[in-house]
Image (cartoon, rainbow, N blue to C red):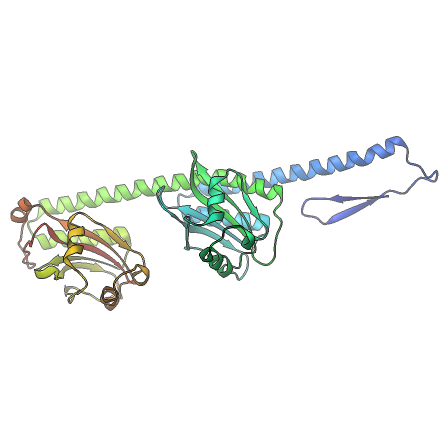
Length: 377
């Protein structure tokens, strides 16, 4: 008779036992085979535990070496992808607890498959993501496109990424989901084993902590940068009565903090038209200091919103639902994305603020102007 024995990461091997000349197995010889099988299973289990331990140690070392969330997640994706030999590993992160989309912040790609890094994936009306978020254990799908309830948008994303099979699990910190790890098989359909699911769940527990720590660090750093910027502008205001110098300091420091291509201050004049009174920019983007031309799409109702303190962020001017005339206006300035913050003054401030310098500032009302950051890449 023969018995197949499998070592972890090695092909099946065969142990052959010849029948005795008597033609019968002794009882103690028959009992030996189940014992071998049990020992084989124990060896495989121990090897799997060692592999999981090594993987977690490598991820922990990465977490301890940096607070850069992209570096941590990219390394974790690479380690997972190499350990489980899958086509793609992606880690999607919720930017905030109220966010309805997930952003791919880490990725490993084993072949020439489409890149998911940077892609935003909606949670709403996305049944497989809802399933992953709603359950503690991982979700294993051999035939991803057969998952019930997939809408047309999700199918298009899956087809564009060439996903055939998926194994996914949510990362949770103190009961709150802060991300999702997704393993994709793109070259074939794959049956995910219990061991692979357990390994992914173990990694998810570690990464949930790392994601939370990185978010806290990022928030603390942004707050420190904001306070530093306000102190700098405050010191500038106390040291000079030249308003143009104060505003020039503001745009320079804001551009450096946001690491964007251009920051301007736009002062309103008659009929909500105006001009750029100060700017700070990087080469090779052209200066737009002075008259920016008339943005015929800017209406009084927009001014009302900004006067109430509205802050508007546009990630892509061509896909933000803007009116065509406003898109054309921004495109003429080579703007691809922007951030707009209103400069609102009280009535008492209109007479108390300095108007010295070459800007010759006049206040048309409470909405004095806009601080605008441009991304031109």
